Length: 398
Image (tube, rainbow, N blue to C red):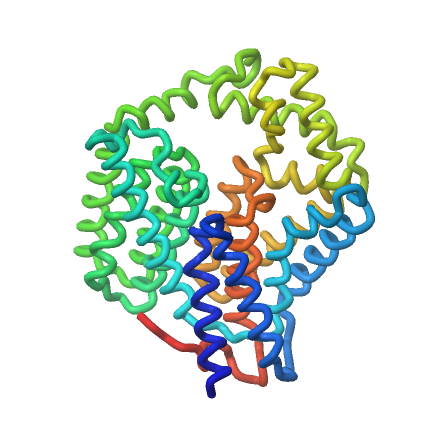
């Protein structure tokens, strides 16, 4: 009995510490507790793998790459990819429990509130002009933005399944959009718009509650109007409109810098082959490219910028095989989501797709833990374990 309670505690501890991964390495301790607890309590299960074998294959490929291709700094790279242990542990040793999703939503809300208070104090009230609102929790802005998008997806999924919008939905949805305005992250704002649009279409098709839909659309339009009237948000999106995507030579802003990263990656992927360059050599190749196009004083060279695209980064690190496996995982998410009419899986697919186009999110712990836990976790909802659907045995906390 006590072990079962410890399992639930370790599960909740893992998900609520994802936004706080770098604060005293708390999420690393959470991962260790989670893995140890579930290994101690592991029982033989009649597991039907569904599409989870793709995750196992991706996990094994990275392990092989780190051990046999990146031999120079293999211990360092192994430590970077330790969160991947979550993939086999989640697949084989846990059941789908909604408490994990609920815990993550409130954790993201708490991280957002801390960032808001910090921003207000540091900016002396000028919250829309502060450039590092997540500094206090040591989290990059783009990751909190994507966590917020997934939290919105969880809230939308709850409304779709119950046809009931509770007080927490009326509070958290506007609050998360307000935080996105403060974070002024283009990817997060675009993703939230796409996820919300899909939610409106699904709700209208499933429930047909025109009164709720009209009220929600009006509220959403007001929120978007407010967000896009913020000077720094306007500036960020005007950069997209005025960007020279063909003859760019000044790589001083986020968009142009990404164009350079994509250009250097594309120029070098031909030599990546079937298994890739490995993590360290990929970094060296990209920095050499930045040096040749700019200088040793450029921020891209000194900070060793990555590909800023998960698909390009994957083929650089792990080759054609790695890219095929990653695309197969994406395809599996979309296929299982559509087949089972699982709106949350489709929301999750949209978030990973858009985020993957602008960030190499699997090279940092926040993104790696987010992906390594929630991907197999959401697959589990539709896997057969002991002949019983996991969601029939799960803890349901609405």
